[in-house]
Length: 494
Ligand code: AHR
Image 1 (cartoon, rainbow, N blue to C red):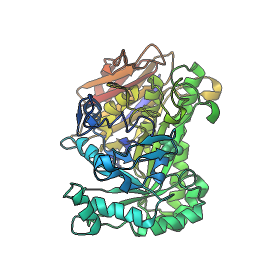
Image 2 (tube, protein in one colour):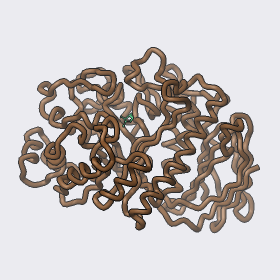
Image 3 (cartoon, rainbow, N blue to C red):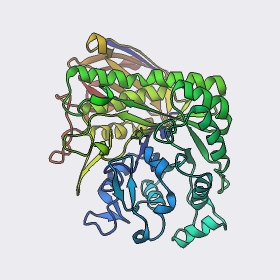
């Protein structure tokens, strides 16, 4: 039995919708095939972007999309990706499989994608990562001018020659990616100076202030960067991947043991320690919490599917990934004051994807369903939750059996998401919702008898949320929930 108390009339911080952000890199089949098929493709598309994937992603209310990388970003020269497609140069993707790319997906196509992913009332903000490692200050500055300059200027004129009259709205801009590694193998003091220089020329051409993100890394790196350049940044980028095994043998996405189930969840939950350490460093140099923590890559990273290109990072996605996503969001919500943005890696066909494609076929993964179920937490007030739960799993990989998070939306509705991490046992929750009178509870659950349940192109809906009837309301805010083993539940209380 777990004891749960939700203080529904409290809560001070908003869960930024940007914690539910996405990431699409020029890597494997994420951009080409996953999103972009070209206007002449037999796959139904809108201006070259495949309709089935667009429709699936629109249902998530994507708050932002990071592009073009990742490691790819510090090799990308934006001028290669503008102008008539037939005249764009072919490039070699040196980081990811050494494949050649025709550059048919560039700045205009990406910003068109973001507009298509912005259905009424839910804007998908572009989040662009500029090239520091192999680019120049001028190149970065001109890219921003090209996108955002509303008036007359050489880059605005070039944009207009390529068919776009209006400047695009743009807020989020990163100055390099992993510049401690693939983005230039820099040392922290050097990057801090490079960051200061590049960001000086990232001008607010539109008159609206850019949100400039600097590349963070380890505690030592972040300390130097915050000290030397904290006042020049709006966000500090950090990355956290959940890798069950050692790097050379990460483990399979679908064929894993019970012990690996718990190891994976234990490692996913350890993002809490990483965020706490990073926050503590940031607090020393920015006690007012002006600079946001930007977790712009997170998710599971397994061995690639057998027979696939090792440079394409293609992996299946199971109920285990759904649990990883859900418990990660629960952790993220507790940092609502400092954590401003997060991007799961990556949207399609790469790492912990939302969508997998196989030529004209596509499926939504269990992770996709968690993003969809948790949509109600976006821009809601994070509520304080007290949870006393048993533990589960083998001694060395032990994790809390239950994980929970609650929020109150603008209309006053409460949402309570719950996970049972135990592979075998149901979790009974003795709950109490304080500070509000409740009349009704409804919910949905994502669960299966098999821990590696997943969707395939033959059975794309094998695992999807279903109605949940295991929650009952009693007098005085009493809430009883019976959570099935290995499940994610989202409740709405009104
Ligand atoms: O997401 C895959 C890669 O992981 C990214 O390109 C890089 O930033 C990180 O190391």
